[in-house]
Amino acid sequence: MQAQDFKGLYAIIPTPSRAGAQAIDATDTVALDETERLIHALIDDGANGLIVLGTTGECATISNEDYRSFVATVAETVGKRIPLFVGATAMGGHEAYKRLAFARDRGADGTLLGLPMWQPCTVDMAVRFYAEVGQAFPDLAVMVYANARAFRFSFPTDFWARIAKEAPTVTSAKSSQPTNLAENIAATGGRIHFMPSDMVVAKFHAISPATTTSCWATAAGMGPEPSRALIDAIMAGDTDRARHIDERIAWSIAPLAPMLGNPELFASYNTQMEKTRMAEANYCDPGPVRPPYDVFPGDYAEAAREAGRRWRLLREEFAGERAAAATKAVS
Image (tube, rainbow, N blue to C red; front, side, top):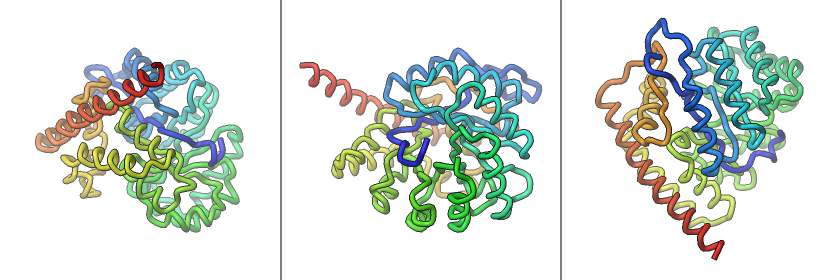
């Protein structure tokens, strides 16, 4: 996949866990039936692509055995109906290689790949890592997991300029903020697609409308309709509708402001927040958080539940609009 191939909504899902997965000695923790059901539902409800095993997918805490069973189930269920990007981030390059090989062999179209997570990388280290991955897996599209806080790397513009020249399989980046977006696009000659979340896609579009053709959404785990409606409106050039949907999504996440506005707090409770609001929205059953991150203070948990309740209302709103449009088209 090249930069211009990324279109629409890329859903990010949890790795559903079975009861007891929060125990340190738990094994066989993935709820595979729920995984299959969720993927079918997302595709039926309008997801254009799928990303698994990022932070919400608990890539850092899932065992190798559970990684393999989950990836195999995901790939078989997707069945090449939509693009599939499988996370393969690990503590070091050797383990990342093993995960990448498994994902490739099971039919993944690409990988969401962060930097190794022990020592922070220099630009030389980071560029070499992605270049070597490309040499080892020339047919696997790489989406850089550009999370500066998680990987203790600032992803500066000179990194992107070198990636564009030295790591040709890197064709996209999972982004969270529009900082230096125009400069990064220019430095890469437009060869890398910087994919924003549904929460900031309007900001990306204001800076670079021609390249803002997709977005990712963790919220899709609560139902993809609002996020899909937003990127559809942006792509259609319907400014008023896009603004309205953007405001509605902002309303839905307003209870999370204390966490979202505090980077250190958010980093500590990211997975817990997402799984809690997903469970409340009742689109999927994400199950308990795997250790050691299965601690979530009560006030933050209630804020996440309120965000889940608001998303459920939002989903009903946009699912109703979609059904009405379908009925009108048939008549």
